Length: 335
Ligand SMILES: Nc1ncnc2c1ncn2[C@@H]1O[C@H](COP(=O)(O)OP(=O)(O)O)[C@@H](O)[C@H]1O
Ligand SMILES: N[C@@H](CCOP(=O)(O)O)C(=O)O
Image (cartoon, rainbow, N blue to C red; front, side):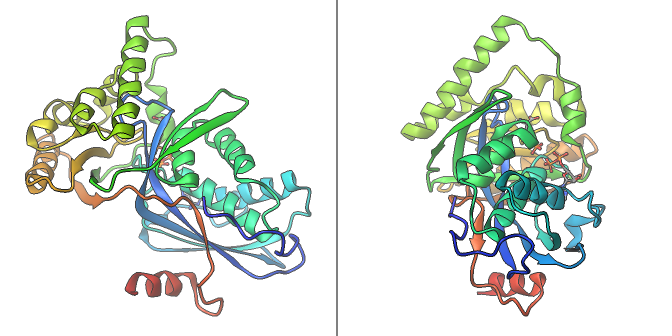
């Protein structure tokens, strides 16, 4: 994580300046690393936060439809937890948000909101909390550290959350990696996709996943991309979630024959994710295969080619405080 502003920021409640945070989307699990592996992606949400006399929340962009603009908003709520933990007064907040991350599709929008809120609120109070403390809070809030670890620290994160503490190691993603996501045009909440999972699993499935997840991490660490197709198999969640995403099983079974290094359900779905080698000559074929397979099961989807994002949530210092958040984001995109 790029560190929030240190020491010199205003105390919450004293009417200080606005802070801006840019936070990446994430893909969780990567197949076998259920609740443990996550990768940040170069698709972003931005949060502007300042102290106000009366709380106001403004949302920009079509991806924010349905997000509440009162004090039940996740970003507002998480920010208040930062002030509580840091022992400062709880101010009213002026919050603006813009996001390119689709909601409830398995690309970590809730994690990006939680992490963005933590980093923004912490920056607003001069960075009183450490990145480690923010990670503990984020994991306790999201309940699985895979998405929040990736959004907070960037890159590929290997993490656990045992209900009391979270620990992680960040692995630098290789520049060769490209990430194709096929985003079905329907929503699937993480809550719903966790409800279909069994409370207990057979020992052989647990052993299967330990071997595959371990091999996958080793493959990323050593650049053994020939191993990814073997390693990205899962027995703990994808088989149970497949009925929720028509076409998913076909894609998991066959994508490697169309140029994928490996394929998985992204997070809790419904997005499907294929890893590819940037030098591969079959990127178009892979994209067509995903879209056609989903269409063959009656599912319309949109595709995006993304890259792993090396930076986690970042405090943006060059935005113009006299412009709207949308104007700032647009002017950054045009640079
Ligand atoms: N910027 C945001 N502000 C407030 N709430 C958000 C924001 N982004 C996401 N959320 C909440 O997170 C929910 C989606 O979370 P979830 O079901 O876990 O799916 P995802 O895979 O997108 O994280 C949304 O329905 C919304 O309630
Ligand atoms: N490990 C979690 C990840 C959920 O990710 P999301 O992006 O769908 O919120 C799970 O698989 O339930």
